[in-house]
Length: 111
Image (cartoon, rainbow, N blue to C red; front, side, top):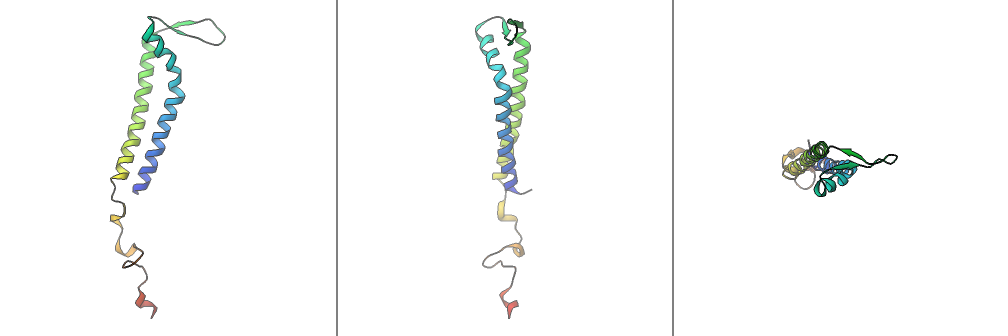
């Protein structure tokens, strides 16, 4: 695989990781504040009164989400590093090079 492909894949994977964190992580913001300040946690549905929920269970779900997103972003960073440390143009065969000294067409063939 080309090195630039690893860089592109890394950028996409990191972006997807941040989008997942932004979309699904926002539901745990309120729970985080409640566990820090109070001993009991509540969920506030739109059509009902506040419902008491298990703080430990929600904290574990939050941790699993964060761990999953960290793995996704970490794999994207690994892909970026692999792409940047790649050999780039060093593996190009001399007969495939274009430009001075590496043209596919030999000027002597035109004569």
